[in-house]
Image (cartoon, rainbow, N blue to C red):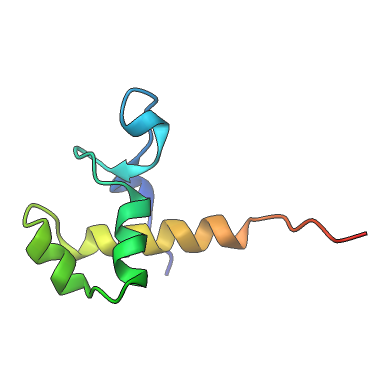
Length: 77
């Protein structure tokens, strides 16, 4: 079952230059992915940002997966 990350994420030109963020915050998808890539757990992120819920981290991962899945690759000549 696929998560509808649109319920939890938004992108508005007036907020963080249009980068995708968690709705109602200025916390970017990029920041959450960076934290995860540096070894932070969902619990670590929730401790750093107590107003977030685990579903927000799941939405970030679902969004990133969708972006990568729809990415078109440029083949080297």
